[in-house]
Length: 130
Image 1 (cartoon, rainbow, N blue to C red):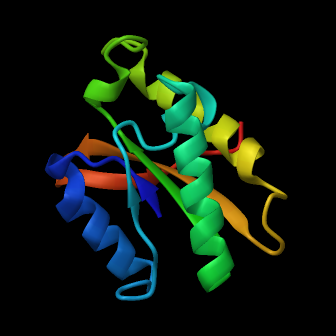
Image 2: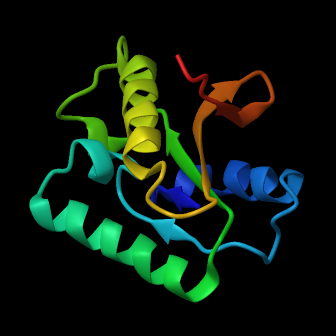
């Protein structure tokens, strides 16, 4: 799972992991902006280190899925997103990250998600392909 390091969304992410049947059975990469480093990195180093970390974890665990989890109100997106366009920006970045990672690791599926506020609090929602 590649997610943002922001503590405000961890309860929703933990519930999502449990619902997905992955409790104690997943690797976690937590970076500011999550998938942003794959498609619109703030620096070349951010992109390189994230890709290196994914490759290292793949070489050790050969995971079958990559879960990309961004969230609304992400401060790592302050320079490129506004409250009016943030959901669309995250959806575009998540879809682009799926493309960037698809095929990079044999047999791995890449799934995009966004943590949003709903009537029950925070919820992890899948991002449609288009």
